[in-house]
Image 1: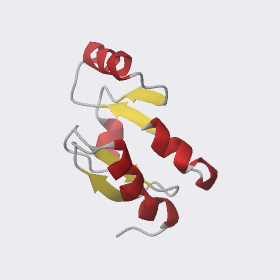
Image 2 (image 1 turned 180 degrees about the vertical axis):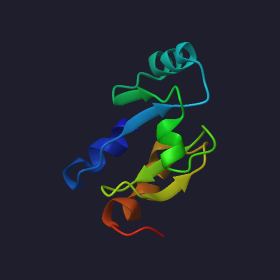
Image 3 (image 1 turned 90 degrees about the vertical axis):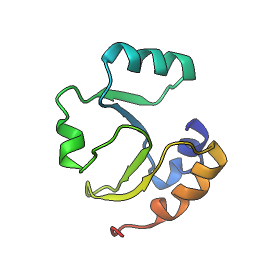
Image 4 (image 1 turned 90 degrees about the horizontal axis):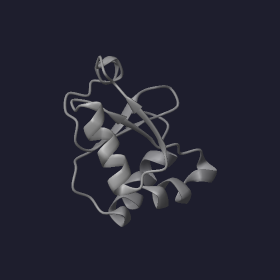
Length: 96
């Protein structure tokens, strides 16, 4: 994820990991295991996920500056695939 964030940094991409549907301890374990150094939050009461229509925890949700979900990417992608998938998201301002 770090390469994707660096790739599109000039365009304003910000990666924020939000843990949902898991215990806080499991999320911390995941962060440490994968060396995540982006911003991380814990949606304990499912407020963020409810506001954006997120009903499952695995994968990636791309939200534009207006707070609109414009892309959902299922889990199981490589960093290279992620960079390619995010390109149209970074340059698109309207939802699909």
